[in-house]
Length: 602
Image 1 (cartoon, rainbow, N blue to C red):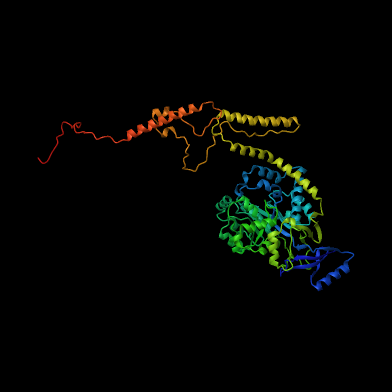
Image 2: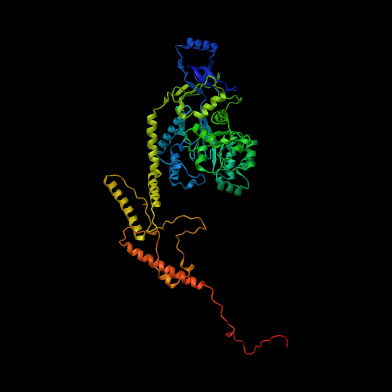
């Protein structure tokens, strides 16, 4: 039993009450509540008197207590890979060799205990970080094609106490749903161009066997979306709707290419969308039509996705990017709390929302610490709306100090109680190094740096021999480094070495089509040159040889010769352009012998 005294409580009840309350926790539920009035103070004194020997009394006068956050789309692998994924265009994901290699390692059913250890480390780190960030409810998305990740997720969830729904694109069967029902397995559809009618029929059968949620990461790529329309002669939303798969338990993740007929179907079937602002910001430059979804009354949730780390920061990123919509702070806070919880985790048949702080409700709390001098809050006269403004404007994951799930503290004073945090960090660092080695991250990074250096070199005035010498020098440096590593006992592996090719084209200044460079050499066939002009030595105005031993007087004499030649050529052209005097051609005209001139009438 626990007594939480004098906390600022954001209840999320029907009236959106906010104020100072004391809470009596018995096992995993809220047994009673008392406000800050004299009557409430008397009730708290009675609690202390009755349970002084059995209850833990905790002073929460410098805490805000609120229900935990809900992350509608968490990708634990992204917690390690978001630095590699940054600034990669969403529609050309296959171009990133490094990420593909790592994905092929993570998402393959590989033999041995090493991959299982890596999966355990990834989920232990990701879920613990989410819990310390205030999130107790999560939809975990994975691109794995097997069930090897369900065991590690189960082990972590048993420690953290979080509520997790595992969403993955495997062709599940009824046995999978039955064996892992506690993880609420859900179907996750991506790459709609690979779908067949048989696949859609299988999903329909699972839906009829109590598969609750369906997640569609479709309409995110224009090429794929158009290909689907060509194959089925309709949009993916229309086809899924014909099979009865679009309803209130259907969620679309970052749908970029939906038309108004699709939005109409989503609205009528009461489906919803999940928005990952950081993914949209880095993966595509296309405008996300959130105003159309809001205008149609479609519910939306904000989540971290691949690249997000802090759901509160992602919420502010969304607000700032779509500031012209003038969304209220209460609506934004609902998108990471009440709305996704009601859609994905509230399974009460009577429709009574459990996501609130009230009597006989689960004791699931997130504690915001107000004791830091850098984070002051004076909410005595605050309303619910003003408290939402404060949370949306200022709160980050670092402001959560405690987490209580089912009446038990999982985090206390910013420290994990269920596991050793240093051990989690050490294990995930080992996995990160192994993934970088598997994906050849350091090697590709070194090659990229070499390319950037070579692109900065101006090779315009270099000959093939000089370029070859430069390439051989780079090759020699790499061989020397390899020999040194071998001498030190380090393992070396054969790999393709980066070098500048001997027939590397000269770097030229970029110019738009139709633009002619002032220093561009004209083709021989385009201009007819006189013999004198061809004999004239040509000057390269851009080439300067600092090692040349020619005297300045020689350069001046040569320049004078060139000037005189040019002047002489120009004077000849002027003479040829002068109009010639008319010549009397009468005496020179000769008529044929059989032609007679006729003057006047005969």
